[in-house]
Structures are given as structure tokens and as C-alpha cells.
Amino acid sequence: MTALEVAARPDPLGAGMSHRMLGALRAAAAAAGELVASVRPNGKHAEPHTPMTDYIARTRDDTLPADAWLRTCGPGRLSTRWRPLRHPRP
Picture 1 (cartoon, rainbow, N blue to C red):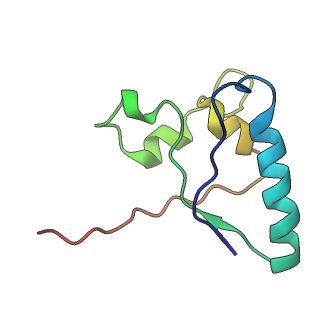
Picture 2: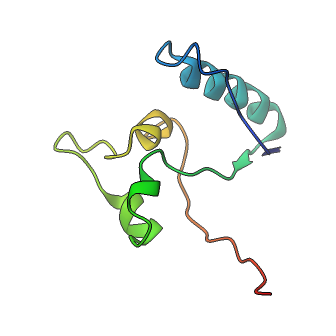
């Protein structure tokens, strides 16, 4: 199963919407066997020159991912496998 887009209105931000959305995706993926979704961690835009492999490997002192979105998806919830997308050059 593939998730093409997950979006929410801005007014419920901070109300745990991402956890509910991920829960719904997990439930649907359980029936399908696997879920593949292309995601961009929240803070990555601030570090455009940092390789994604380095960015997603960063952890806080409590060993959770440094990025908030990766913490939401983090250990025991979803596996994070980085594979760069290849776009054809014009």
C-alpha cells in the first residue's frame, strides 16, 4: 500500500492529529501487509545541504530522533528506510 498524501487543515495543529493519521495508516497497512510513504522530516528544510542519511541519524540525549516528525514515526512505530528518489535531469 502507498500513501500519496496525508494532509490536515491548519486549525487542529498541536491536537495530536499526526498520531491519529498515522494510526489510521497503520490500520490500513496491517491489512495490506506493508505501507510505503514518501515523507520529508519537519526540520529538513532548514538544512538543505545536510545529507538525509546524516539528518535522520541524529538523536537527542534521550536517544529519540532529533526531528519531531521522525519522533512521531519513530522507534517501535514505523521503520525509517531512506532511499533517495531519482529525478531525471532535463
